[in-house]
Figure 1: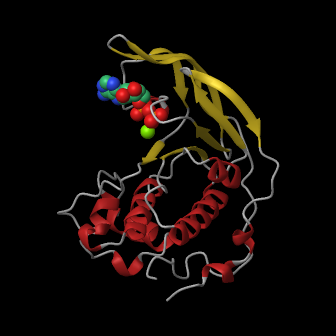
Figure 2 (figure 1 turned 90 degrees about the vertical axis):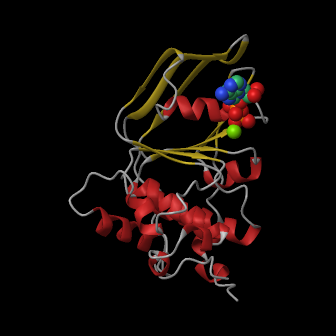
Length: 241
Ligand code: ADP
Ligand code: MG
């Protein structure tokens, strides 16, 4: 299908995980209530540069609320959090502005000398060079999700927050995008916090898995499984047509 990225990732052996560094984000006793309802009730977490962390939790457990707080989209929280560096977010729905071309969506709000050039380079990284001039409504789901990733990446974030960005994709497109995210992660090395409700996905992608329950991190485990086999077998992805 047209959902398979072009030469961006190529058939070369994929690079390994990036080196981990100091903390990019840390929360201490983070709380958040909506009226009477306490959603976050003392969240302590730390994400290091180059670390891939998955956040699991039941629907309504506060995953998106935590992500929004980390993204600085919600000032009305208790406790403390610090983010060291720039943050970019990709949501479940790509949220592209329909009346701006794809490249202009990626360039939106960029303060660089050549925002268009930077946007086009990011689109090339996600295999969307040919769709740069397209209108968002003409993109497939996978393409829109890749455009959303390009919009996050062009900001060269130290912390990349992904809020269930894969759950609306068909299985084959999801594999392609998993591979793309791992590849971009390897080459750019941000800390990633991936919110998902899919345990398999968390174990497949992350170094560390957190479970949000009862308003706090109820479980945490390190993942020692090898990374997805399809990452080492680009041919598997070439199930085009
Ligand atoms: P999750 O992403 O884990 O599914 P959310 O963080 O979206 O959960 O929501 C956690 C809880 O907070 C839910 O009960 C939800 O209804 C509530 N909530 C989220 N946003 C708001 C809001 N803006 N106003 C009131 N309640 C909200
Ligand atoms: Mg959510």
